[in-house]
View 1 (cartoon, rainbow, N blue to C red):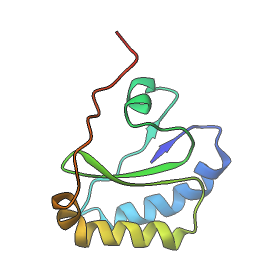
View 2: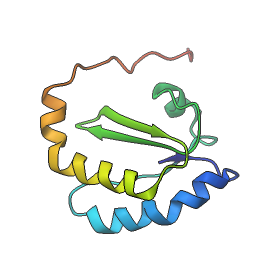
View 3: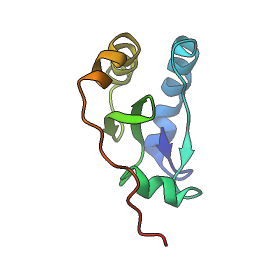
View 4: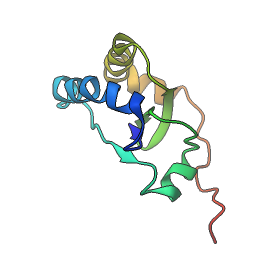
Amino acid sequence: MFYTLTCPYCKAMEPYFQEYAREYGASAVFARMNIELNPWTTERYGIQGTPTFKFFCHGRPVWEQVGQIYPSILKNAVRDMVQYGEECIRKSTPIGQDITGYV
């Protein structure tokens, strides 16, 4: 979950994010990143709004949802990624994430 401290939508989604992290924590890694403290990573993954929920499989981004969403949508996405994530990564095309404006 990419967030900012001042984002009201991030604060609204936080309890659900934590709940799903507890529920699915044995099968997936959950992380939060403050985009204001991590500008390089924010740029690297094209984060343009908060909250952004980005799913990765073997380090490759495979799904993203931006903004406050129904908690059930987020939960279903987590469940589906845990269940079908390996299949998804086999059928996807890698995209270079090494592009940056920093020298």
